[in-house]
Amino acid sequence: MRWAKRKDGQSGFPAIPPKLKAFYMTIAAATVVGALANVLNVSPIKALVWAAALNAVVAASVMVLIMSLGTSVKVMGKFRIGRAWSALDWLATGLMAVASIAFLVSCSPARSSPHENEHFPGDPVQQMDSTHAGSSDRAADALFVIAMVRLACSEA
Image (cartoon, rainbow, N blue to C red; front, side):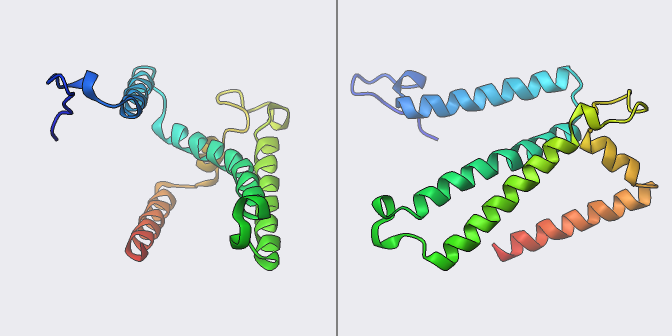
């Protein structure tokens, strides 16, 4: 990678355009968060599950925004989404919103039992661990996930 050079001959980070500075700062912030998670002994599996849960909750609102833009004649003009696809897309958006709300309700502290005092109430990782009887089930699940990832990568 070559360093960016300015007209005055200087090179290095000051010569990088402002948009790239924001990109590199985002990378630096993510690195600091990852290092803090490591120092604070945050379980990477729990972090991954909660990141996926947050993504699912945010996805519903992003889908509403995309559907609003995609069905707008003012924004899309003649390229807007047709009625049949629009109905199907709004159905998917509604299902995603219902699933997100159901997830949040299932994780609420009010739904936890009195015996769940060792972990966060409604913790999906703990619920997954309690549903698996032994390590052979976990190994089978891991192999299934690997197979799905390989399948998705081969089709891409």
